[in-house]
Length: 126
Length: 169
Image 1 (cartoon, rainbow over the protein chains, first blue to last red):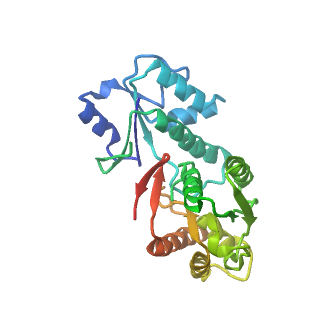
Image 2: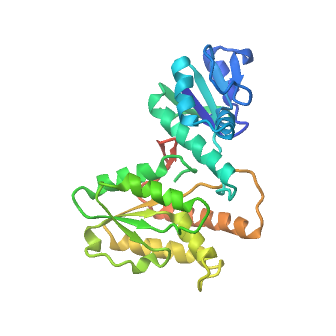
Image 3: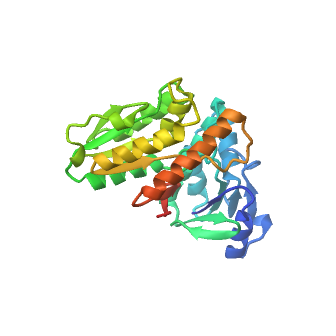
C-alpha cells in the first residue's frame, strides 16, 4: 500500500497516474466506493470522502481502512488533507476531520511509501 | 506544529521524553475543557501520557508565573500555543484581543529562558479557504503571528504530517 496526501487541487491523482503509468479508469472514488470494500482496486482517490461516508453509515473507518488494505495489498490511496483549518464547532464535521487524520496516521506505518503532493510536486515523507 | 489529528502531540511527547533523559518532565496543559470536543482531547491525551513520567500542570494563562521545583533542570512540554492564545482572546480576562499575541509570545519566551528544554505544540489552521467572521479571522491572524515569532526563536521546528516530520528548521 502507498499513501498520497495533500491539499485539494494539488494534482495528486495526476501525480500518481504519471508515476505509476496508470489511467484515470484505474481510479476508484471514495465518494462512490461500496462501504464493504471490494477487491481489485488499483487507486482509491478521495479517501477522505470514503471516511466521511463510513462515519455517516455508523461504520468504524479504521477497521474498514484495514480491510480495504487487506483486500488490496498494493492499493494506492489518495487523500485530501482536511485538518489544517479552524476546528469546526459542528460535531460531525469535527469528527470527520479527526477520524480522517487518525486513520491516515494508522496507515502511515503500514505504507511502503508516503508522499505529500504540493502544486504537483511530490515530497517524500516515507 | 500540524493540523488536527496529525500525530503532532505524540511526536512532541516523544521529543520531550528524549530531551528530558532522566531529568524532570512537566506537561503544561493549557487547553480549557470548555470548548467543543475538548474534553475528549484532554481524556485521550491523558491516557497516552500515562507512564511516560510527565507531571501535569494545568494553566490556562500566565504561564510565565508557572512554579516548578527545579525549573533549570525541567523539560516542559507546552500543549498548546493555540489554546493559550484562545484563552487570552476569548477567556474573558483583562487581555482583550489586541495585545493577546504579544502577551503569549513574551510569556512563552520568558518560560523558555527559565527551563532546561521547552517543547511546544501548535496548530496549523491556515489552509481551509474559508472566510471567517471578525473574531475568528483575528484569532487566525494572531496565531500566525505567534507561531512565526516563536519559530524564529526556536532551535528546531517541524510540521508533523500524518505522524511524519517535515523539518522547517
